[in-house]
Length: 177
Image 1 (spheres, rainbow, N blue to C red):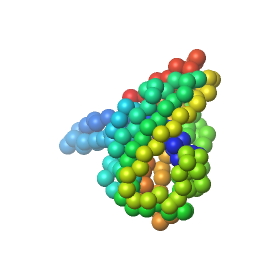
Image 2: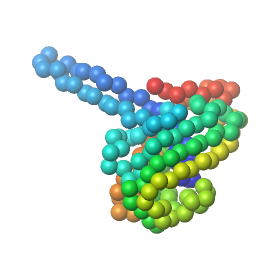
Image 3: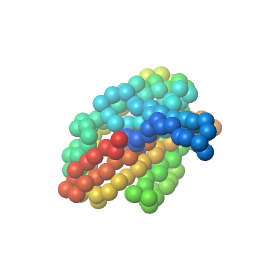
Image 4: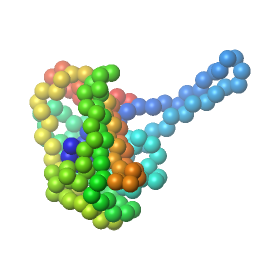
């Protein structure tokens, strides 16, 4: 799993909504599910409030947005690391097609950084990434849900991104909101 691939697969949004529930006719219980969008021209969401993440993502831009099957997707991302990221960092990737889990794997982050011309240790401070990804012309139609969770060798959260998208027949793409 490429580091940029981690960002690119999570560049799509999942939805959540606020609602209030009536419990057994008594007091109302409020359930609030918040969205945490990533800044920039993208539909990307953080899994949870990113306040304690090691990587503060400042901006992620996609072109085209939304992505299209058979078209090169250009990704530009910038952020700031609050500490060095050393060998042993991991990426947990989960992809579901409808309700069926098709990918559930953990990969070495540092090995995959080489695919985007980076290497560990990643030094504390600002970082930028630009990458083009060729999307296949034929993507099987259906709903895809992606979770990409990145953490250090000491299990500290680097970032976590999520996405839900629907590909239609003929390569059309829809972000589920």
